Image 1 (tube, rainbow, N blue to C red):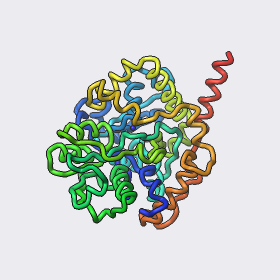
Image 2 (tube, rainbow, N blue to C red):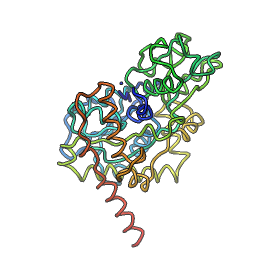
Image 3 (cartoon, rainbow, N blue to C red):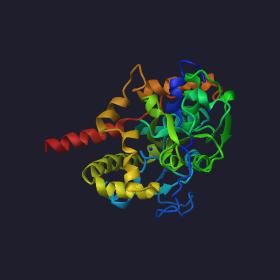
Amino acid sequence: MKARTIVTSCLLFLMAVFLAVGCTNPATYIRTTTETEAVAATTTANTIRLGFSAWPGWFPWEVAQQQGIFKTKSANADLKWFDGYLESISTLTAGQIDANSQTLGDTVNSIAGGADQVIVLVNDNSTGNDKVIVREGINTVADLKGKRVAAEEGTVDHFLLLLGLRKAGLSPQDIQFVPLETGKAAAAFVGGQVDACAVFAPFTTQALKRSNSKELFSSKDFPGAISDHLVVNRKFLYEHPDQVQALVDTWFSTLDYIKNNQAKAYEIMAKRAGVSIDEYKEYADGTRLFTLEENLKAFQPGNDMTSLLYAADEMSKFLMDVGLAKNKPNTMLLFDDRFVKAHAQNQKVAKAA
């Protein structure tokens, strides 16, 4: 399903929500057709430049590309792969792409820094694909005390690590934190240079290749904490709502394709991830792709983390509590569910016809 960016007691549960994935896929030497183009290349006014990176919840975009689903939905998409999730976030903020696949927390953090972005779709929730993986002999979180632990600083997995430490009564100072890009963190762990690492899929597969290594805890232990989204620059959304709608329509059509053509879809996504098909299938339970109905519900007001409005407000408070934002980010205009609603309405009309 990208580096999600840096805790207080009652808001610790929110940490993982607000940051997720950052990184370099170990097999990203497999290039998409648009990857070698300059990110800032001139595109036609009606083209939507869409970024994505290594996360199981975002690999469906590759299926849409290879199976021509963008075209069937009139989405003039220029799909761009990023080896590093952080790069995709900064590229969106700089206006060099029009839309990106990123977490709720990173988006709130970007807004706190002055970006003007809109969430139009929920891709997924992480339900185990973000993990803290440890060497033999480390059996509890308390065993991490004094150990060398690698993670990409400021990412969701760094915060997942901090969340686990706090829950066990440890502080960040109780470990020897080694800041490494996610792919390098996994490689350092496999090479025996660190005792543990906090990484997300598909880098979890790489890390677990170390003999006798194991998962210590994961996002599954903090349900609903990490959500991933399609985020669009507001200016582009205002100027080209038709292309945003086409992108949302493409997403749901792609989910239908994956459901009905699982073998082919898994082949495409596994190749993009740089893992075997069997390994990719192991990610299925660790990322829950949101249905249309779950999308509609997520955009509604609520009083728990299942509501994006509630989650964004709580994460804004969290950013201030830990000093990442001087003023509370304005999330009042962060969400725009009209595209999901329009898709739902079109589906209803199609079924009635």
